[in-house]
Image 1 (cartoon, rainbow, N blue to C red):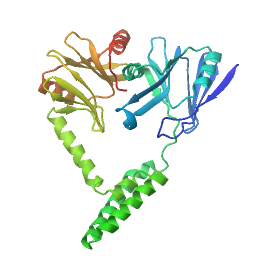
Image 2: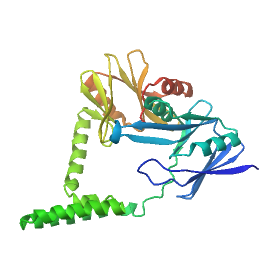
Image 3: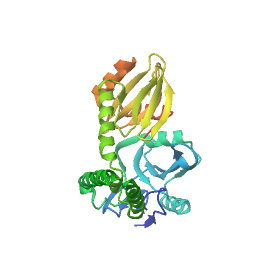
Amino acid sequence: MNAQILPVAGAMKGARCPKVSLTSDGRTLTVTDNARGRSTTLSPASLYRYDYSIDGSGKRSRFMKGVAALDPDGLVLLDLPGDWHLPHLREFASKAGIPLRDGKDDSSKRARRILAARAPGWERIRGIPAPRFARWNTTLGVCAGIAGLALMVYLGAAGMWGAWRGFSSFGRVLMELIEVKWLMVAFSPALLVVRPVLGGVHRWQEKRGLVVGPPGGPYLRMKSSRMLSVYRRSGVITELPVEPGSSLLRYRHDDLCGVFVLDPAGKPLLHLPGRWPPSPLHRFTERHGLGLAMHRVSREEYLTLTTHSPQAFP
C-alpha cells in the first residue's frame, strides 16, 4: 500500500483553518476531517482546484477557494473548501495518478457552474470544528438582546446616551477579540426585533408570489416585468432578462434537487441547487406569467442541463 498524506495549507479569508487531510492508495482517496473525527473514501476521476471572487470588486470581494473531486462525467463528488497550497496539491495528485485541473483563471460563472453540478451523495467537508456553544447560541443571543435592550432603555431614561455609545463601542471591540457573534445582539438590541420582522415580511411576500426562496438566499424576485433577480441577504447577486415563454424547472435526480430557469426554447439560463417547495414556486410563476414544470430527470438530462447552464449558485 502506497499511502501518502496531504495537509491543508490554509483557509479561505475570514475562516478558520480547515483541518482536513487526504490519504491516497492509488487512485482511491480517503478524506479525513480531523476537526470532527470522520472520514470518507472515494475514487474520483479528477480533481478541480477553484479560486474565484464573488460579491463585487475591490474591498467588497469575497474569494472562494478549494478543491473538488469530480466523477468521470464532471459531477462533484466532494467539495473541500480551503486555500490548498498548489505545489503540494500538484505533487499529491501526480503521485496518486489523478489528473488535477487548476481553475484559477476560470471565470466566476464557470467555476460556480462546475461546483453546482453535483453527483448523488455529494458532500462538503470544511474541516472546521463545530461551535462549542452552538446549541445555546439562540437562547444566549435572545437573553443578551433583552439585557442590552433593558440597559439601553435605562441609560436613555437617565439621559446617558454617551454612556450607551461607549458601551456599544466596547462591545464591538470585545466581539472582534473573542469572535462570539451572538454578542452582537446584546450591543445592537434592535436586531432582536428587526430580524424577525424582516423574516415575516419575506414570508408575506412569498405567500403572495412576489419572491420565492429562503430569506437568507438565494431567492428569486421579479425586479421588473422582464428582469429576474437573484438575491442573497447582502443584496442582488445577479440579474437576467426573461422572455415571454420562459419557465422554471424544479428537478429531482436521485437525492439531488434544485431549480433551473429555462428560456422559451428550453435552454438553461440559471441553476439553483437546493430544496424549493412546490407551492411557493407555483405562486411565483403564476403571478409573473412563467411556466413551471416539476419532474425527475435522468442522469443524461441532468448532465446536459448543468453543463449548458451559464450561471449557477451552489
